[in-house]
Length: 521
Image (cartoon, rainbow, N blue to C red):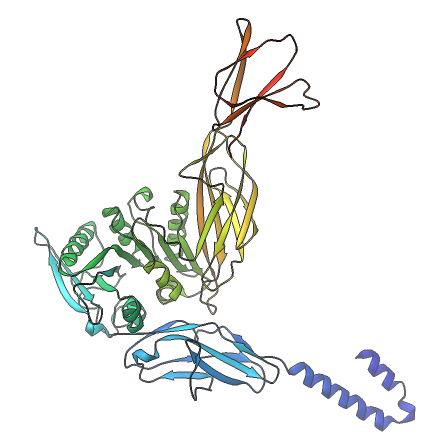
């Protein structure tokens, strides 16, 4: 542009008026070209997974850049007639409104479609039934529950036991505008009871609470929750392989409830709180999805500690940390994320679900512990996240604190991971993907863990009678004993495969060097 303008202005003496006009037209054309661009959808809090009570009003609004924009909203991939504004309003919201919404934004320069956003339409809090459980000592636990629509006593249903945070008790849980933990104030806590969920995979929602004016989950309360669950499961047909535990803010209560009932829960979803007093070894077999917001001054550090403890113990929790959202906002973001709901309901007690997000170490193939004589380890595997890219895969040996970056994402490998000799090495491979909340940022990590016993082969060679005795310990069978006559040349040759210690060696009058090689991985 500078060159062209200088050429034009260089002829000013031959027709100033014409050249000036040409220059102005040229600038106008370039400016118009710079402005015209394909639209872009900007992440916004007004286009984020949300829940609404049936009959209430809700809306989605898209924020997009570009000129002369046209909009078309879609529900589950199908165009919604006449919904061509930047805002889509539900007034009043009906069960037919529930689903995944996208909006196509276009102009003359191009088209863009937003990421799917879920609207959950849920029943009102008044639909929950209140009941009480009283133990043999006369201590009472109030609780609320909601059965699926058209509950069939002959059908087995999954059950979600959700422990709320504070402030909340039996007087407040269904009362509007009282406490942040109530069912009336936050429809997002009822997504498992949504009308679409009831139609596809109905769930019983079991919501224990505290007696009026009580402010904390105590050991006594957790014993009451356990007893109430047992009685409830005699009254209604519950799938005992699909009982889930959830909790937010006072996460310690959910952690200790799981510890109180080993082998009972199929999975746990917890947000914005700290682990309880139960040793991690007692809960690590339960799959966890943990989430919080990084700017949650109360809950973020607790969630990070939970995930660290679980991974150190050999478990594979999924962890989402939003960049923003605060305490309450961070809790709500996870509660309404379809990927979290789908993941939890796919879990079965004592079984590996294989549902995404999932990272798998496929090489070396192992059962239980993996034992090697090598000072380092090579790993390979795969990683997948539902509908999203895996952005990176890392590894950490938590025993020696060494870390590194794997090569690849969906298919990855990591070589030369250093091991500590004569130690049990806990090697954690972790993948990173989205937080499913673009306006709030952050990411989700998920992992697989390999426990490696590094047992170097230690050999001794001693004269014994007319021969020599080669003995060794460490490593894993099968072994090969090799001999060389020149270390400089390294002319190693197998003397015996499938060797078993100790091994007698004949003396043939020539010098020789011997080594023991582990043939396995």
